[in-house]
Amino acid sequence: MRTFTQHDPLTDVELDRLGDFLKSCKGGKAMNVEQLDGFFAALIAGPEIVMPSEYYSEVFGGEMSDTCEFASLDGANEILGLTMHHWNTIAAALNKDEVYGPILLQDDRGGDSGGTTEDRCEFRAGIGGCEQLTRLESFFPVQLSNAQF
Image (cartoon, rainbow, N blue to C red):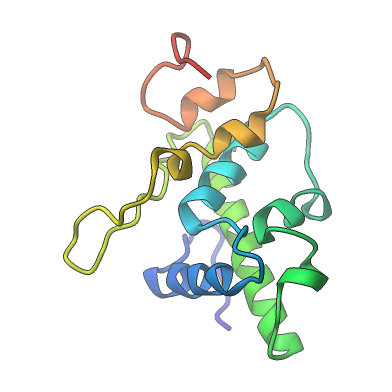
């Protein structure tokens, strides 16, 4: 496991590792990396701090003890470390009022991975009924004032 610098985003290899793990979660309800990215951005942009224990079941498609199989404690630490590091990367950008561009995965040929609009808009689940959308403007380089949710 590598040591992360403060603003160093996950590498493609790390995103692939996290994505592969999420695909392996039992039940088929775990988020993919695009969904995770949008969901985290929404939770971070929201008005309240959300603890990992509150959102892990959404990320992993159920209680971790039921959906996740880790080969070892180091394996569990690796996956949780990757999720926390991704959270911190998004938080650093949004807290500095920087534009944060969502992750849009590509296939091996450089084309669209086939992710759905819902995958790319998981932030809607994260904001729920939140009416304070001003910080979400930093998630998209366009104004959200006319957006339909």
